[in-house]
Length: 466
Image 1 (cartoon, rainbow, N blue to C red):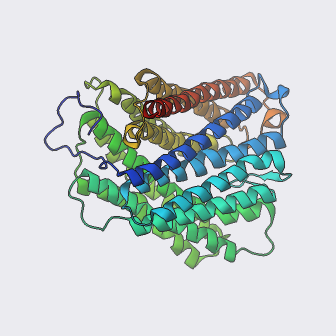
Image 2 (image 1 turned 90 degrees about the vertical axis):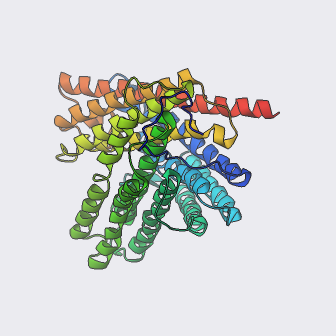
Image 3 (image 1 turned 90 degrees about the horizontal axis):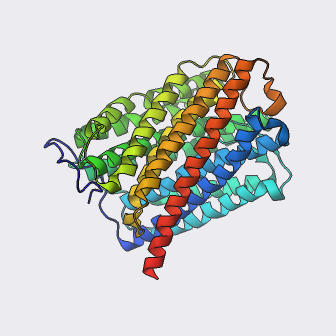
């Protein structure tokens, strides 16, 4: 049932994009993936405090810099992007698939949890230095690398199980079947990502080491991962809009076309491996082109359909207000990051401004979906007031954070550095990075509120059950 039971009636041509209720077996495993995703986000948020303070001119001299900043950045990125998104994938693929191979699903969850634990503990028990490779930065330490490898094995089990449990393919007749088709299509870039990681490793030149080695190792698979996250965001936008308004003015077949555009461009990735070695410039350029194509074309029609379904002033049920906040915030941040992408020139902080906007846009959509799924997984409804606040606070803080980075990038401030290494010379540069730091702290508050709201809903349900 839609969360917006008191909303205005949907238009006759609107489609209700939502998955049916899950049985107890699938809901139980989905709860496990929810716990892993939430713990990863909490750990990432704690580390983000270090990152923001080490870049903000007001605090940068109070903290140890250089390697301390980079170690925190490595684990922050891997928890907030890799573990969080894969765990959300575990929830969505569990809820959209059949009950086949549930034991393999539980094994995937346990394996991913063990890998996440080792990666999180590695800065405190290991001795490895940070290597700031794109997509999946690493600590060159056995504890971290074993954790990453074990997590990858868990992700492989999850994808394999999801392929086995995927619903039979047919042209979707309703919104539920369209979402199932979209999530099934997302398994294609997931399989390609795993293939790309293996292909890069097997064909890696012996002369490469250090950062260059991991940059090439994760470049192809890292691009494939972006197709998965985009598909998850499109699913979340349609689902959230339907939960708010009862339906979206888009047919299931048009939605399927958008999902196909968002995922099938990943087929260019194995083509790049067949034509050129992983370290060739042509290889990298084709992957960048494929990601821009798949991450751009389907965004506008889905965003417009969602916004048309949930216009400002639409009467909503109280339980739907946090969902609208997440939907609006997600679309705004993703578009902000996309626009910045056209302004990138050089290796400066405009680059993290671009991907922070896009990644945070995806994260906000998935946060809203978590709020919507809590009752489906047996928990209480989240607090309307604080859940709504969390999305707007997180989005406003990230907009300031991104705006400060974009402004600083215009002055040539370099990425992946902190403190004195930033070489802030003018008052404008200091002000811009100050805005970045303040925005980051506001975003941290929003993320903390999200975690507390979700934990509160989960605890209230446990108290009721007891």
